[in-house]
Length: 267
Image (cartoon, rainbow, N blue to C red; front, side, top):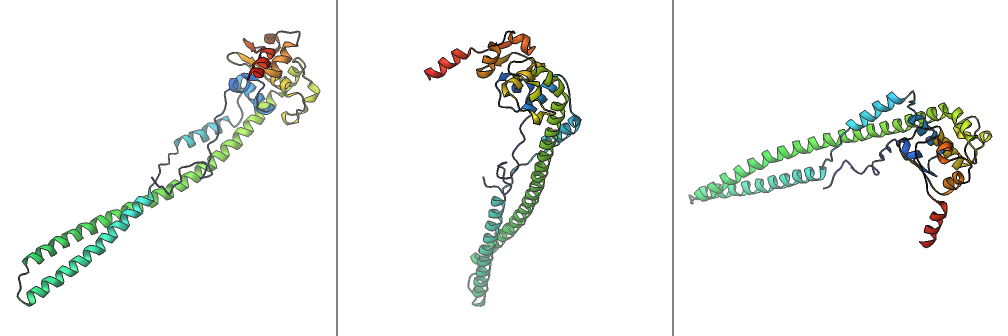
């Protein structure tokens, strides 16, 4: 069905905002693709911390959830108007022709009863078509009004999504900064960690990314097991301390790096 309101979010320039990930989905499997700031924000959230913009984020999310945009088929409404307009023109011609035929028959005293019956039937059809045309025009006007409302709502949704992205960035920055001192201390404990690489704030971190992830897990309170693979598994396996002691988690699953290498080689 054709619509004028463009229901494709990519075409309308209003791609949905990604859902805020749970801390376990960010830190539950290492290495992770997430940067230092998102990891630290996840660690802070796992500890029950919230940002100053948390309430505003909730309000924006509620506003977005309340926006409903149904597709509007202007093409069908326009087609119906065109059809009824064409039908009216055809019936007017027929009524005019029958009226002329009836008048001509009367002028020569010819039988005009059948022609008059046809004229009355055509006039009734014309009246019905005109009524239908009015309804079609009204339906088109309603569709245009709804399409305009949809455009306004899509613009509002786009503005809200932009605000939400900005507020979430603010929240991640606040949360990451709040736990940065603890993160810096954790770098002194985890394999490959170097507190001097932390800098003054999360954006200044210039150390080993795996060590950063291990430190983030160490200061977090993750529900469920943390899975270590690849470089993270190798770093922890080479340490003299146990994985649970290093990461301070209830459960750690270390995937044997050599087993992973063998499986990769078989493929």
